[in-house]
Image 1 (tube, rainbow, N blue to C red):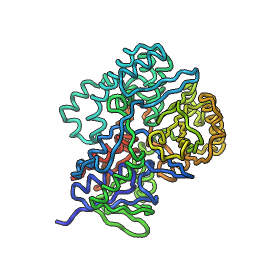
Image 2: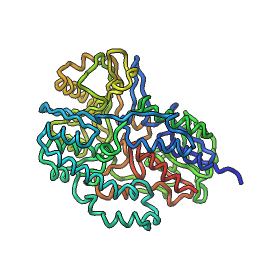
Image 3: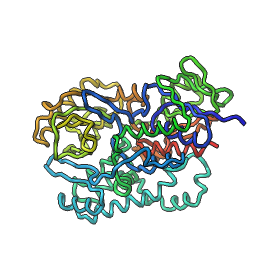
Image 4: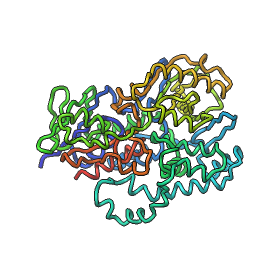
Length: 490
């Protein structure tokens, strides 16, 4: 019997993980990537002696990366190492409050009580509830396909269904947090987790309060080689397993004959395969690669609200700041107005919440001596034709002013080089429709069920992985999408 062949479109983290899993199962695997490098959003930028992780900067659930090496019979430590963070994030408020989110739950709760007066018991109770939501949803919503009958016939699924009210799907995340905490600073801190999948805490279901559990229970980590090393090490593993990567190889079409995929067309060549797995945004998968087959397009899914996007400044800073850590958040004084601007007005609030990631804190060679590499990000709406050049210019000045005010230093004078990533370039570089980072938004209680399935119901041999399909965006969920796809393929 001849070896079956799988073609994967896109060398994002989910595509690479799927390639590894299928290679382990004995498939011949080829990955076609439009860019000249792997990783998709999980890539890097180098400029004038500064190195930046271009996209995802928070590393949680490292066991999903380790699992790939173990599946291949390898020792993960021989390839990939990381350190657990003692402080997950530092929070800076406009009123001068500063909170360190310690990895230790009781220390974190104590810090919040000391800085805000919010009882530590309230924080511990909230995190216990977060753990409950995880225990109910993990095996059903995250690790299995929601689009197969078998999922709903399992005993653990039935148990989760009986506990469904416990996941708090019928009120918003903000309302749940406002009920659980008295101090508005603490409410804001926990509301922020909605942004982890590009959603709005004033609209998204309180089920998303599961997210803090991933940080506080499983921990946050930093790969010793930076975030891009995740991509590099997994590509190395895949290549050792015989996976072939073709870069600068844009796929133009998924070939479908009589309801079955027969491969792809790239660089004016037909590449035959027994199955095709698209790691491209599902919107572009249909509108570009399956444009000949409009009858196959899931119109309701393709018309869903998109997640938010991001505006990122990569700044080389000619100074070091002892008050800053790896992850830092500078909160807006009016969080609700900020989200109103993103989601309702489709523009940027004058006082945005600013995230600053500084990998040189733990990887000193990412910046010259005495300097730091600042990844400066704000949440922005998806691209709907806004005047981005004007929005970017205004946001840059206000971000610099905000950071200068809080840190007591003129930040603008310290910037020695700069690159910018906005919704337009996110779309062009990563084929993310409208620059939305997480595919569709999670701003309603049925969002988990409305995401595109990992297997086509209309085309035999066609599968989907990555942040635009089930179970969602972010490194852990992308890796789980690869696991689900591998499980669907015999």
